[in-house]
Length: 80
Length: 142
Image (cartoon, rainbow over all chains, first blue to last red; front, side):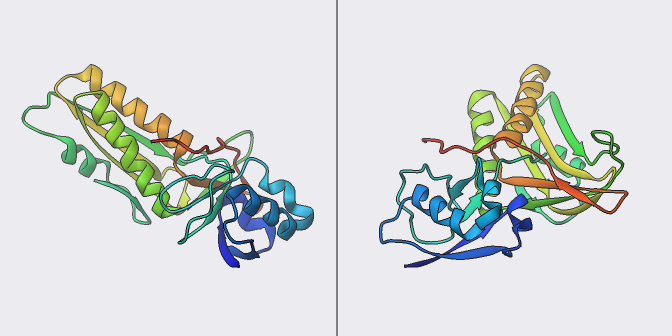
């Protein structure tokens, strides 16, 4: 199934825009989504080092199944 | 008062939000855009944010501070492109006494830097820019 994953921070400079669409198996985990994203990023896959998948409510661990709703891939944070 | 906003911050409004006749102390922290940084002349900083999760994390951090100390907390984080000297984050903690107000204020800003999904890109006088390194996020079990 197709899922849209939003990009933030340094990932916006990957030349892929503000989101990417990936094809994932049913009941895919966050870890699987990151693996598929690396293919989308190609030569810029190193930008995904240290990144996590999150919903609008929580950060997901790699073994968490992807829920419905918004998904984002988040680099290490540096607010303040 | 807890929010992510594109508008200019008003730290005095946060102080008022945590003030009470029972409070003998209000501790405040305001983070501002600086220049130079790491030897480069900074002209502006762009703040990017995953807003729904950021506002939830700000609320969770404020609630954690209010459970840990007898305080009332308010916090705002600005996003968008900010010039040098503009406030990017403001925290206020009101309490009966200064010790817990200081401690809660420090706790909140440290947790913001560790777990709120915000990123900053410095823009330099030469026209180039750089996303700053940060802290990797992890699933928190609640």
